[in-house]
Length: 410
Ligand SMILES: Cc1cc2nc3c(=O)[nH]c(=O)nc-3n(C[C@H](O)[C@H](O)[C@H](O)COP(=O)(O)OP(=O)(O)OC[C@H]3O[C@@H](n4cnc5c(N)ncnc54)[C@H](O)[C@@H]3O)c2cc1C
Image (tube, rainbow, N blue to C red; front, top):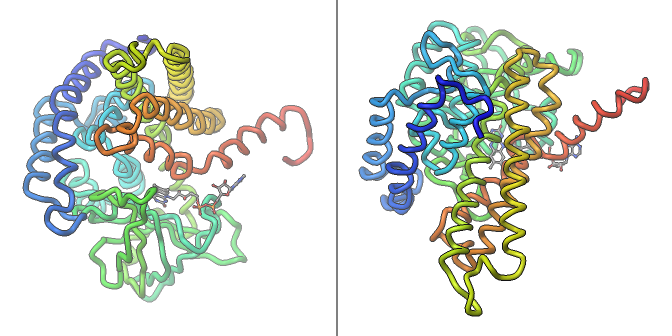
């Protein structure tokens, strides 16, 4: 299918696909087998660094770098539709996105620094992020409040002369386990109940090595710590940062989170389709290579139907993803919002189903460490929460639908 594949992006898709298949995927098992070999799962062994940095250097050499940059003066200036095809390819293997410097949460964080950072922030944080020298985390979610409603965030941030003092806890800070993670974009509460609900919060830059920042533990995803990336639980005790670290101004946190929700909002969805395609391929190869009851697994039971359903659902999800990307490219964020909500529900759900069917076709090996399927399943399952719970997106979709038929406040 080449809907929206332009002459500009076609060779990039081919180049990324080739590098993912021939160079990144073959090193993935070795890379992850190294995790923890130093005794600390959140530390890189020399071989891990060699693999990752070697692949990154190769990607840069080939000009396959920072595709997400929409600014054509510095990047390729790709549309969201064009980027969708690349993200899908990168999503086919776990190291893929980082090798091309297109991984979460860095792309969203770089977008924030680019739009709202001052010259010093850009020099200190954006430049090394663009070069893949450091990593970053986005800290919004808190253990003590329902974080699907961002207006609940309670981390205190009080001005004291030229500094702000932060106190509270954040958790599920993805990427904060990585020793290269140098900067946290942190959502804090600077206002109070007298301010309008969406003007009480701010975003502030907190260097990870600031005094008073303590990583308490790695949150586990179905028993797995996702090292060396990690989803960390972090306590802030009288953490002092200069007032200049506040982005945009007090009470403007929601403005920034809306900005952060640019094209990056659907990058997860695009990559999820890559997971689904990779799983379908594995499923088909397995079904054609293994026999039970005297026949290839493909020919048994309802397996033809299962494979056909998976193919059809992937195609449907991809079309919705491309339509959403296209609407985003038209520049009307309001018009795009309901479509973004829809694809955020559909893409992880479809990909999760396809991966689950592939797991089943693999038998016991499917849930083991011997295929990428188990890790893919847990990742996709978490997306149904991490990218905003499904229920919240469905509520948005339903409200828009209902409003067409009533003047009541919905
Ligand atoms: C692997 C992983 C990585 C993550 N990475 C990050 C990160 O990097 N940075 C970060 O800040 N956060 C991150 N998160 C946190 C994630 O964004 C939150 O878990 C999510 O926003 C939900 O917040 P909560 O866990 O407090 O659930 P709650 O707000 O307590 O919600 C619980 C449930 O209530 C239901 N619900 C809530 N609202 C509605 C509604 N409007 N309608 C119907 N039902 C509703 C839903 O079923 C929802 O799942 C990550 C989470 C995971 C699992």
